Length: 354
Image 1 (cartoon, rainbow, N blue to C red):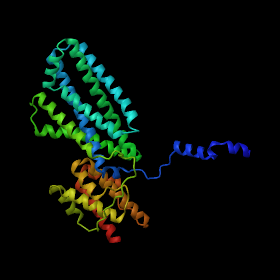
Image 2 (tube, rainbow, N blue to C red; image 1 turned 135 degrees about the vertical axis):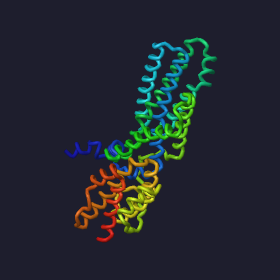
Image 3 (tube, rainbow, N blue to C red; image 1 turned 180 degrees about the vertical axis):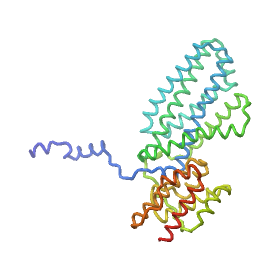
Image 4 (cartoon, one colour; image 1 turned 120 degrees about the horizontal axis):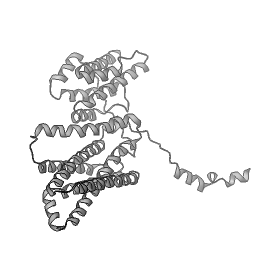
């Protein structure tokens, strides 16, 4: 039996090293959604993903306009769609290979490829392409290559962005909040554009608008650390001295005074961190920036998170919870000044019971 034990590779130095190499231990805690949203790297990746998805709309508009302008047959249009699908499949493979090794480099390359494809579909580039490839088959090959390039870029981004956000191993709540904001931004950004610009703008103008947005998303990745969320989350926490305020007046100020709610989220998160510190809380500065960038949708999650931590602290010191965090979520969703007032009331009571 001793001989068998000696032959066991796990009982030799080489075997232990091999096992350690195969099964590395994770020594740091997982990222929470609050950890992620409090960082620049999250917002860079989220905005990049949203703007890249918006670029897909521009590509569709340009492709339809192109087919009408060139009088392309249905067969050629179907071929373009098939090549686009092929590109998306290739993008899936690129994301699968790249996400474990160099996800940031893959995202940058996908953004650059998307930008090149959009530029190639611009009117000046199409005219130059038509002159260089005068015969119909050459033009079809050129446009087909653009479709494959575009599909590969979009397929890569669609897969790799949620994979990067899940890299911190924060579980379902982190992915729901983190990737959910990407989806919200995809819908919110064009809504702002439609509100600011008349809908009778030429298709080429919209094409260049979306091209510029893809460029902005790509530039945001320049200052992101290559490690992304594979490292331990940063130590956060900016406790602020709690200060009692009238819940009613606070709710009214948040509703009537522009940007006061941004200030309140800053103060409230710092004060709750002083009362009940938790990695589930955003930092005060992160909360202020997030409440300003995502005007409304994130407020429900932030108020409910603060109430949950206040209730946790009350239970720890053998007091009754203040109010259900689910009810705060619902009130903030339906009438946000009421949700603000409920959280402020809980902060006041925590100070008084202190």
